[in-house]
Image (cartoon, rainbow, N blue to C red):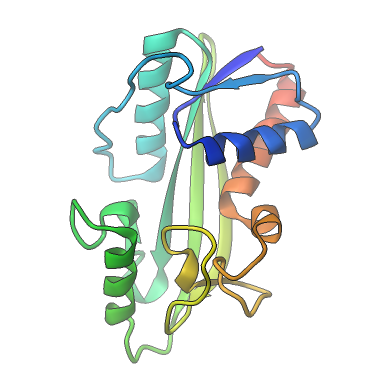
Amino acid sequence: MRIAAATNNQNKINEIHHIFTLSGLDDIEILSPKTLNIVSEPEEDSDTLKGNARIKALSLFDKTGIPSFADDTGLFVVELGGKPGVHSARFASETASDEDNRKLLLQLLDGKLNRKAYFETVICYISNNEEKYFKGRCEGRINISERGNNGFGYDSIFIPDGFDETFAELNPEVKNKISHRYKAILEFTNWLKQDKYI
């Protein structure tokens, strides 16, 4: 079976394939738009993670006819009413860098005691006869400063519950076993096994 993943990030493809293999689905070939020699970059204009994941998965499926999936991820901070949320990648501005986004978030939380936050990933899978959604969440808190060199995005300021290190300080293998994306992909692979690849 072949499945198309709406990402050209090879590290993400490798991570997904690793989880598929651990789940006993090593016979599934995971393809990216790049390997399929197509461009699929739809405008992500939904105000929900679910909506944006669907936009990306549907665009890829329409272009390839191959069962396709996409994920969308956000960081939700309680003190900020859930912001940056669905706008996590563009929090500081439309052209913001990861560093810009982290800096703004730390400024907004300066002096605040409630630093609870969570990452959430939603996966949308679309085929000829299915449209399914899978979710993963990782609870934690925002640190008062950046720490660590691993990861990307908000990893250097997010400390997952049960740990004292940020995502960027944790060994990548440890992070991957507790991350929001891992939990969502695991839910997806469990469904694929039960549904026998429908």
